[in-house]
Image (cartoon, rainbow, N blue to C red):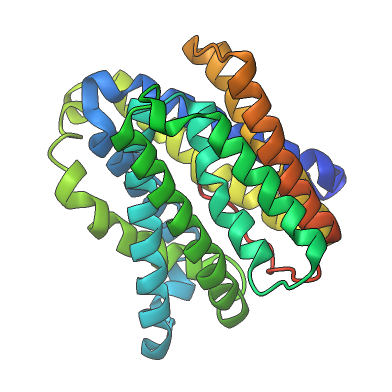
Length: 289
């Protein structure tokens, strides 16, 4: 962490966002061999292994009373990753993240009664409508999975705030990741078996775990120590655009003007809700995507 302490926190957050989306793009590249379930299983299992090694002493000392919250968080974490990866199988990465982003945006606006916040709701709604889900242009199953992943992302933020206050540091995430392995195993363990026979798949799966979970979590934790949560939230609003850019560069997923405008509206809504909102949810590292 000494090296990370020398890097400006804004750079750490931007690097974390890029890491998550590159990891998601690499994961989509494994779908042909392992399927979304097998890819999720590799990611979560490797991340759980790394975190368990890092926090092995703290995990052994974790009181029984703290395990129910960690288990609930792990359930949400596992289900969120499954629904996201299955959505990405059917939709472009940038659009999936844009739709999913409605989850944290809803949390940011929850309980607000200010007229200004209606502007952010309208912008977000306009962005989703621009994607024209009723026209059949978007896969309806993928769309539903992305919306479900967004709802789980909202639950992740709320539960993660409680878990972070109750279990500071990474021990809470380590415990939850162990539970998440059990959640994704029924749909992914069998699909992941080819990775045991192919060293290339095995290595890529481990890299996805590092890029999508371990590395961004470490970067964001260090950044949050030295920056305001509101600034963190503002920076996170660029994630849909980064996802779209990574999807274009690594997956050849070109988007039209309508899709880019939709992404811009959702980003503007996220920025406004974070910058001018009165209700700030404690910022938590993003697993997502």
